[in-house]
Structures are given as C-alpha cells and as structure tokens.
Length: 173
Image 1 (cartoon, rainbow, N blue to C red):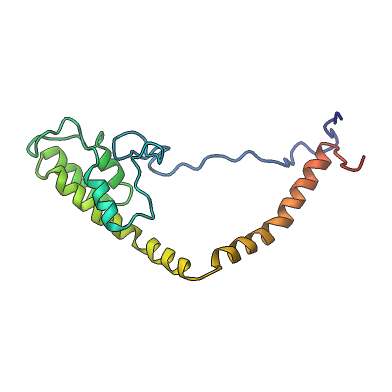
Image 2: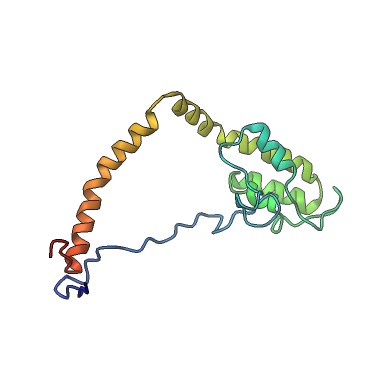
C-alpha cells in the first residue's frame, strides 16, 4: 500500500528529530592502551567496572610516547596515549606539571602510569560504591526499567501518533 506525505502537516513542526552527537572535551576518540582508539573489540580498553588492581595492571601496559625510550629522553605529551587519557580526569595544574615533567624528562613514564592508575581508581571509586549498592538490591534494576518504561510510553505513543498523522497513515484502512 502506497502512502503519501501529509502536505497539510506543518513543516516547522518536525515529528522525528535526528539525534546529534554530543562530543566531550576529549573529542570523538579516547586513546586505548595501545594508542589506537579505545575499543572493547581491540582489547585495549579500561572498563569503568574494572577494580583498582585491574586498572593498575592495564595502565602499566599502556603505550607512551614512542620517541621516549629512556627516562632521561624528553617526551611529547601531545602524542602520548597515556597522557591523553590521564588529562581527561586530572585538573589543569596537574596536567601542566605532567606535561612539563615529560618534556623536561624530569620524571619517567612508569611514575606517570602509577599516578594515572591511582587517579583513575579514585575517580571511579564513587561509581564502584554506587554500583555495589545497586547490585545488592535485588530487583532494583527491574523496578527502574519498569518505571522508565511507564514514563516513556505516553511520549512514545504521542510521537507515533504524530508520525502516522504526518504520513496520512491509518492502520485500519
């Protein structure tokens, strides 16, 4: 059955709006442990559910500035995947200190990895606590999903109705 678009439907009132990407301060890509984009399928990801020891082990394998072979070699934090990940969670002053330490070779990459592991574990600690609390409440997730579905259902039904009106679609024709 062929349907025609309802030309009487106001063009300035879109029914279905295309979602736009929200890009954080890091941009579209977060570097992975191997320098490529972080991805579960690449096996180079740090997961928010990872415990502190797992985070530390993963970060200790993280690629750093390839030109910096020795602790005494000056580095470039702009191309260092470790620094790019760490700057997502550290404040500007600490970021400037690590950039200076890297460029001046006053501190090695192992120390930076240890500091990042400690900072990331601290950054995720509140999430881990909340997750543990939620996991301890049997049926909590199902209740939240049911409440969300009940809240979303009328909005979805209204959107479907508006889309059908805009397309002159009557399922009972």
